[in-house]
Amino acid sequence: MLSLATLRDVMEGAIPATIATCAADGTPNVSFVSQVHYVDEEHVALSFQFFSKTRDNVLANPRASVLAIHPGTAGIYRFELAYLRTETDGPLFESMKAKLAGIASHTGMTGVFRLLGADVYKVLDVEPVPGREVAPASRPNLLPALRRVADRLAQCTDLGALLDAFLSALEADLRIHHAIVLLADADGKRLYTVATRGYAHSGVGSEIAFGDGVIGAAAQARTPIRLMHAATEYSYGRTVRERAQAGGMADALTDEIPFPGLARSGSQLAVPILAGAQLIGVLYVESAEERRFRYDDEDALVAIADHVGLAIRLLQQSAERDDGPPPTSSQAPTPTGATVTIRHYAEQDSVFVDDDYLIKGVAGAILWRFLNAYVHEHRSDFTNRELRLDPAIRLPELSENLEARLILLQRRLAERCSFLRLEKTGRGRLRLVVSRPLRLVEVAG
Image (cartoon, rainbow, N blue to C red; front, side, top):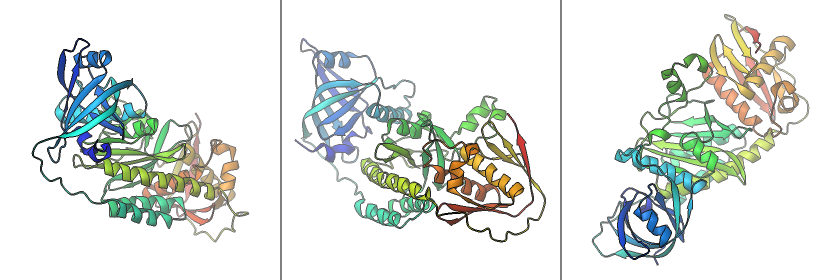
């Protein structure tokens, strides 16, 4: 039998497959199936979309024969299958659901194609059907690129450098020009953007809920989600803010950072970043080109994401350990220029600078603590240890993402506030640099 791994391009869903089944009395039926999905070397899954004769047949007589066509060579392959079960949730279902959405959008069948279940089959045999084929297009060997990426990441000694090296390596070695790294919040409900590459606006600090779009689905199911074609319901070209403004809710979203993304995304791939059983975050890549990301791209990014997940956890843990008391503050420059009013809204720890939203949540609470210490205690130097022990910041019990929140804060300040800067002064130590006079306003509620 042919190896299923060598036939994964046949199972991309670019060309609908044909399925033949028989009723219990032997009456044959031939129909089309949108997806033949690679599961492993012994199993495939077919999309169950309609209550049809095909469905009745496989439940009564669990054997099927499928003809699938290679989209690049026009080669035809016959799969002999035995039906095992139907999955209606979980990683396999979510992956097939997203891919079907892309197929539906590409073929004008959005609203018609809807995945009801993933029918899992054992592969009994696979054989090529005699006929003419064209030579497949050459694909680059990704192993040398993976090695170069790993070498780049191995040189990083802090989380910020790791994130930057990660996205730079994707662009230089894998030719992926649009990428976003999001980390999971401690509550396990949302992801927040910490690094991006290839967008006019970075979107650092923007958030995605678990289950929302291709990124949220990958986080929730902890499985890669790959779209070969644009899918409206998985697109981030329309941000949460734009959808809300269309519904007359703009005033309620004054503290929402628009999510970055291509206006017209032809291909999308979201890969969970894991450290063992722990979800660290999600890597999201996209391209205006359709069918840009194939199975081998998915394999490569899964391998890299696992490497990055372990590195992030180790670097976060290392950053949690600081050395002794805070360093002696250096002579800070005297702030000059017009006074800046900074408001803090206690309910969500939202921080506004002259009425422009800056940041909220844990990062907002940290910044407000820094600013109060600077204005009222004339302090500029801080340690991770004091932040973890400060009840006003309300860190979760598992505070390994403190370093990520500090990086988020540092990057938002660099983008939005030229007069405020966070500098690292050692392991677990940092300094707030202020160049303009500040007026702090606390808003209750």
